[in-house]
Image (cartoon, rainbow, N blue to C red; front, side, top):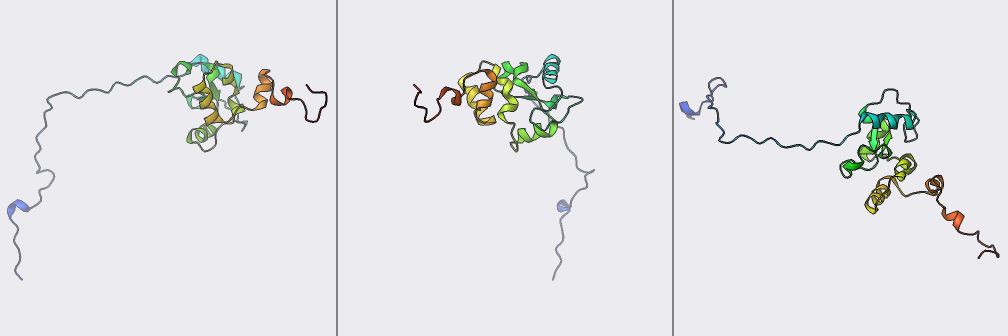
Length: 163
């Protein structure tokens, strides 16, 4: 068998031998304009921390001694409703583990944990979002707000004097 000889052009050059010419751009790259994310002010964070007495809202009862921005959860998403981002009634205090589980969809906060948002004037879209994310409104929440519950408006069954 005859050996095949390689041509000098087919040999691989070392990295230091490769000459690269700089590419000149005809136009400059445009910087992508970023919208500033809505956030909570320090006053809102302090108000929420005091309202919860430094305890996680989900029921795990963990005490949060040094709150950081990760500990504050917007009940109504701040991307959808930026006007409510700095409203203390839309923010609850949560420990880092509970907040991460909620955001991942693994273990959502119960509706009673976010009951403070019921004080806001909610439209139909916001009510629907709360039902999908946190579950249906319960009679306990209605009783706390002073609204009549289903059991108080209906007379007991078998009562002959009920009108």
